[in-house]
Image 1: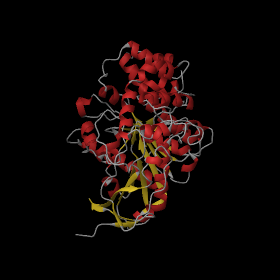
Image 2: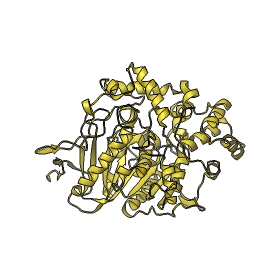
Image 3: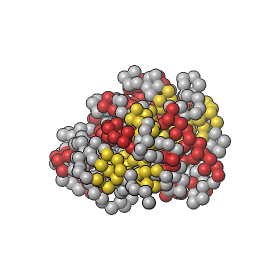
Image 4: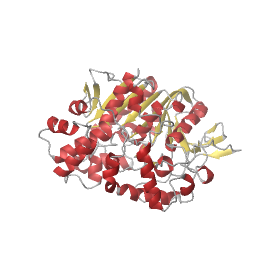
Length: 496
């Protein structure tokens, strides 16, 4: 049996293991545990160590604010994992995956993000843990905002220092994510401390999920009051158990609709504590920064699924139950003002309440932010490749449609992971395998060359790769929605 692989990082030697033709290193700290005096602080550089550190187990999961039962783990949350075809190689392209969902979860250990297939294709794959929920995004008077983004920057700095020792090229780094991970990627495009830390970006299902400081301050104050804290400060929250804090945020998120009159659009997202456009860590939204030439464009692969909202309506048990009152509320809160509601009624005259709710939620939360990021990046001098996934998830008789997150197991080639199985079925069809290969090849080509393999998305043409059993490059499929949103970039949520 060959000796297990060892790599010397700037902090010390790590020993991983060989697996499926590549080497994996897990649970490597890129910053100190953010607990005690460091809780709610910016990430601190990791400690050095003597000897060899075993890097075969994933680091502890950051406290999650989700309606699932995850047992508390350790506090060394700020770790990352590396999968590499060969630690002795040089100049391999690097993919850094940010596994953030809803700004509420970040579990790099999810089997859906297994790097085996991508490593076999020649990529060095880094997956990271970072702070989310209250730990990462509560707007506290005495702590830096957007700490989750600061963690991601610290992880990218670690990659710049160390990835060459794992066979990677620090000049060929692509940062990638889905949903809130894609929102993180979009934010990194505009944040000054992130400049020079990556060359390309992949963003699947970008959310338009930001708060103004005024709204974030009021929401955090209400959350602190729920906890019995004396003030919305790090000092007042520091002694509350992190997993208890996460559980309380789960309950708080479930009751957001009660605040609709004062908190408006935010209450439709299920995410009370999201990134804040604070003027410093996150100076402005990615769309305004790029279109205003205050951020430079890059090589960007961005896209969304056709039926983004279907996953959430099915999971919540609401699918098939939406009423005309629900449609009016969705249009009033989420359609662009002042004429967006009328625009949807005119563009979809035959649509019933169900279709209207699904369309406006899909557009406002993911489809339009993704399409507009492609346009904004091109306006800033970058090259944007846009896709829409239209292939229907076979599970549950196809009721999920081309739903949110279906593209992730396809891209990673993890069709047999738990999430992949839930969406695609126990035995992936030949069509699923072929589509997975197509999307994965697009990723590998893009990470390696900056070209996704189809025509770029430019003003006028709006060419888009429509991923299906027979994929085609066509004009953007959601033209009716695009016209409704023309001139309206996703704006931060604000007080009503």
